[in-house]
Image (cartoon, rainbow, N blue to C red; front, side, top):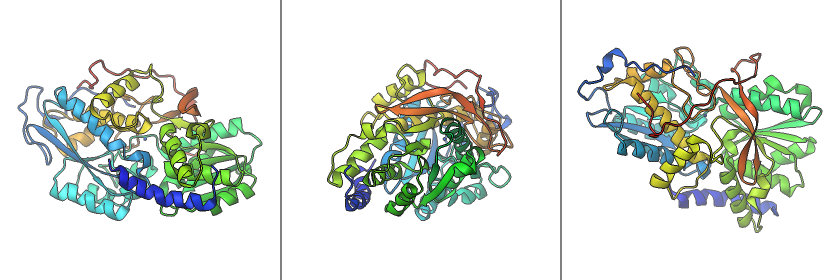
Length: 449
């Protein structure tokens, strides 16, 4: 992680706040290998680009600097930590995973450059968990034209679900349309008669979220829709418009820095609506730290935990604050051994959970997998693992998680409210209570083949 670069970006955002004078991402698994994988006793061979008899090399693009860096720059190191744990415990059929992730600064032009480097120069077997909707859209066509497995994009864009055009690409986290529907139903049920407004990133991330919200929230309740672009931290005009609309509830599909800016700009105007924030922008520890850092540079001292209290959000993974959960216990153990300097927060949990799913997929792909074997393995369905609801994976559906619970931030921890809800991406698809059983983490910490 490159904290100094992150702080330089924060300083730009903080300057804006200071100028305001603020006082304040399932089908059941099959254990059989694909035909090209060989038998369980087959000798390990160099079966595909990026795979040798001893290693599996994969790559990723990540925002280690730039507007999305706060919080998100912890994800790839957390994935690397879980891979290190797997490598220390026998690897994937004896092979060690080499994970190369390059900084794209959340800039699509840079994303295109670093991904081409990973594929054409570093010869990676697959791209894993490339982060960001606008950034990954810059490379999805290239990866599919090169027939590189594009595994578990770190974005909930519905656009990843296009098996005909993008047969190599798979989502992982709850998509933004489903998320919008689940949040929208909660707002409709719990804030009936209130004035509702939307604040969202002006790209597929935000627009997919709004699409889901509009499937559930009556148009008569919505009094304002304000968007932002991630390259402009001056959102004072949008917040002023939200306040002028009389909104009592603001639903935000925003990355963490812009959730913090929304809160601080609102405080400046004496505007205190109920915030309902996408999982993407609501990790309690990340958000609290940003609020305190931004306010401090603006000449004020705030209690970040106090400012996040009461924010409503959702989650498709167990709450990182639930220390009784077997997955939280596993990933905390791995964190303490391999990534101890990083915050023990939802971003860490995300990175390790995604890495766990990737190991599941590699084990299912077989001892000597081709690239096509990995794609086929995921299309055949994966166990939900750390997810609280099943994956959608099939030959006709490349989206990831299908459900979430509503959470409320209390004293810096996300607390589950009510049952897990599952739905589809259609406007008329019902939102129902998940009746299945959440899986427990394996004692070894590593999936079974």
